[in-house]
Image (cartoon, rainbow, N blue to C red):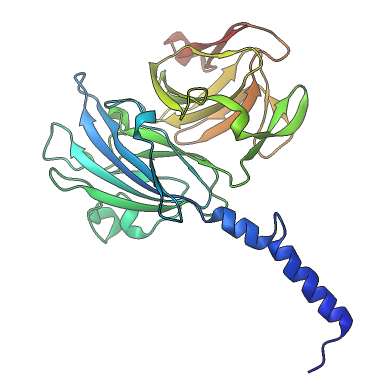
Length: 325
């Protein structure tokens, strides 16, 4: 069969587009990410609450080389649990150990956002019809996740096995965040009055704020420290940044209440739009994330954040965003 010069030219152009920077093969190569080997433990706190804690986290590259990043996490159980950060194209094996005082109760991890098979749903056989997908004393359970293209975002993970009828122990503290960063490494944000793509490498700090009934529970991811550091902030925390730093907020609902998150003095773009906002509604398991420039247009100060549901604010559901020179 004879191929015309025009058709040959089109095929050649298509082939070159596959291997060009940003082409399909380059994109697929970029999505051939890390394999994360994570071990968490569900533990009891002296208060009677339950919490997840990090045991180990290793990242395995496609060439087999491994990095141990366990040191970036807080030691011991925390509420919220460890914030796991992966990228589109990554996979993860997450093993949960049973360490709570009640040896009769199973604990699990049910995650949102990522792709997984039915045996990684984190529920009991009574619900899933397959198996008890939970950790028991001396019997850990491993979940397998895939951060497929399109899964970028901030997602909750939580227990879905404790108690009766096995709805889970989120109200006792067994929950945490999974952040899946886009493969591009860039996120649109409102900076200096313009919508621009911010490179995540330029984000200095990330704040994870959970809105749980009438309390904020928080964590900071500090990217200024070499290798990064997770800092537990516990309840209704003061979060802070230096003037002009790019920071990223993740706000997630937990429990049964509906909230309205408001941050004074700052605006951000509503995800998926070009609208500038300073208030967002947050319901159970709903969430948002955004990047802003600390103190932009308003300068340093103690900038209040709170739930705008008056009864929640009166109950103390508030904190400060401290911007310093």
